[in-house]
Amino acid sequence: MARDPKHDILFQPIKIGPKTLRNRFYQVPHCIGAGSDKPGFQAAHRSLKAEGGWAGINTEYCSIHPESDDTHRLSARIWDAGDVRNLRAMTDHIHHFGALAGVELWYGASHAPCMESRATPRGPSQYASEFETLTYCKEMDFDDIATVQQYYADAALRSRDAGFDIIYVYGAHSYLPVQFLSPYYNKRKDKYGGSLENRARFWLETLEKVRRAVGQDCAIATRFAVDTLYGDTGVEVEKDGVKFIGLADPLVDLWDVDVGDIAEWGYEIFCRGEDAGLVWDTILSEGKSMGIIPTCFTTLDYLRVESYLLFYPYDMSQMYPFERDPPGDSLWELGLDFTVSPGKNGFRGADAHARLKGKERFKIFGLLLEGKKPADMGDPVFAGNKKVGVVTCAMVSTLTGKSMAIARLDVPVAVHGTKLEVRGKSLKASATAHTLPFDDVDKKKRTAVG
Image 1: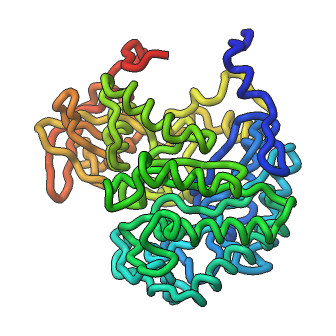
Image 2: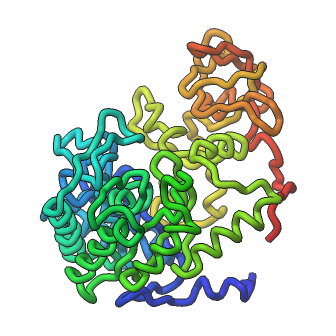
Image 3: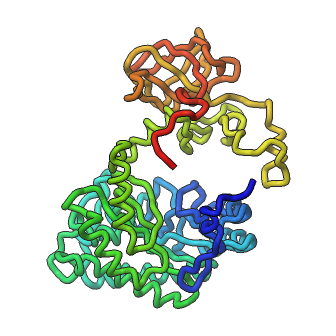
């Protein structure tokens, strides 16, 4: 099938600073549970897209110092030579397939629990995290500011040595740079607080130091929450958001713009800095008739149950382990076999995919529950007196008024119409197995034009 000419631009190279992306397919930083301690996993997973033709592939958030330790979660790290060596496996694999590798340098400030390092992070002011429990930062003096900015520069040098082409100064999701920028966190009265220019100073100086450290060896990117959705107590796109982009644009080769903060996660939009305000206003104005509004991350649960959108690890064996087998689900079990074209072979994992057909240990399936109350994640599902599954995500639909859930069911009962029962701690309800998605299986309904 011939490609629509309107898509040709997606396949054209684009220059970002001293580097060139071979096309416009770009994998933003996102978590996969690999970090720096599982270099083989990190390299194999990230390089799959490079092998498939993507132009830019990034790590997840990557801690620059033990003061930014996210344990109990798993981030990447670029603390020392060992991390450089481990992440080099990722960049080597990505480069082998002709793509660029990016790293997202992260300092969490009040949102870094430091449960392993036991360090106390620093921030623009002293405050407790609204995201973590019993986590706080101490207010920086000028020496602290210089020290943390040097953490970024040193981490940038280690990133360059690990083979990364694109270096992020990560300021979205309420991490340190945007904490300085946002009056919600920044209560300073000195040259790093008060006016926008003062609140932007830390971020701008950090970008300058990172750029100076790596020179023309790497492109510089920054991830920026152009609107933190905190109203005038935070960063608003029409006020500080667009103005900050204007201040920082000479220092940035690639803008990665999103909406929301760590407590109200949003969706990411990639655009040129000077277009960010227009893009945001256009999305809201053109989408108003379709009900598009800024919203919180938990709204995704409604979307994913009704539309059959699985979410790692919450629907997977990493969350609900097998009794005898190690974690790992096949596409056949998850109902995602449609993602591989019939007869396609020769790709990484093809032999295993073909071998596992017909050997499903469970199936992801839908449940319709009687009543108007939702099940809880982890509620067991029974057929008679036998446990046959577990609920992974549930909700009461605001569209249909029905209580519905995604579940991992034993294969014999994963049949449309099978009568079952959910027996949770707070809910016991009859249920019926239901194919997914619950509505519009043939995708005949549309609310957007395009």
